[in-house]
Amino acid sequence: METAWEAALELLEKDLRRRDAAARTRRAYAVDVGQFARWALARGLLPELVGVKDVRGYIALLSGANSAPSTTARKLAALRALFASQREHGRIAQNPADLVSTPRRSSYLPRVLKEKEAARLLDAIGASGPAVKGSVVGGALNQRDHALFELAYGCGLRAEELVSLKITDIDYDGEQLRVEGKGRKTRYLPVGEGRDGRGEALRRTGSQWAHRPKRAGRACGRRGGAVPVKDWKTAGHERRAQTAAGVGHTRTNPGRGDAARSQA
Picture (cartoon, rainbow, N blue to C red):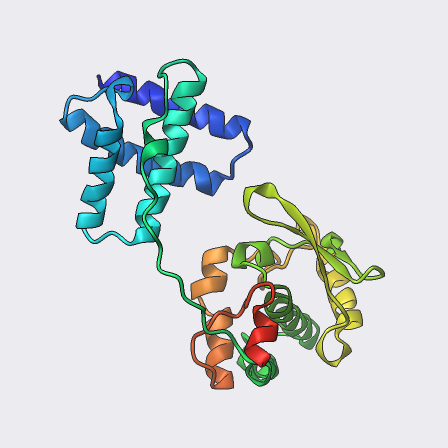
């Protein structure tokens, strides 16, 4: 019985890789489906024996355990992917998770930075940045941080999208930015010279990083390597700058259209 679930998980992993799903998505689905598999094993259920009532009961159990609606919705999405894989390979006739309603998520408007707050944040970057020996590198790092914050605010980029940018993703002449988002979907966003005309400074700074060996012009850290998303979010860049600017914790990336609304 346990072997049957292991085979189902392995088949799902192969299908996700074939569809070019992101590594993070594959890991999350493996964890969520693994939890369901253990729950089903305890009840003597094989993958082909799971029905709509079983999936609905499992989701109700999660909701009763005070799981956030977003967490429950993610786990249900993982189950839908699992049984879609089983159905595609002829293991089951229908997907039992398709008939289970997704928990309703609470909707709210996030608090985003206003124009003056964003300006204070950018002005504080130079004073709050890490101490680096050598004025050339220190200046390049400050210019990089200015560019990252401006792009996050002006283009509504996610943290992972932001730190994954390469210098070659910027079209200076066309004033647009190439971004690869979730599901490896590519979009192009308009981007201008930036606050105080830093476009040319960014071009020069990017050139310095791009010509360092093995760094490929990434939005990099002090040693030239790419900045991990967890470091950008929690280890200091955003928090130090917000503290120095006297701005409370908010979303630096307002998202498409949010910046205009926040300034109204």
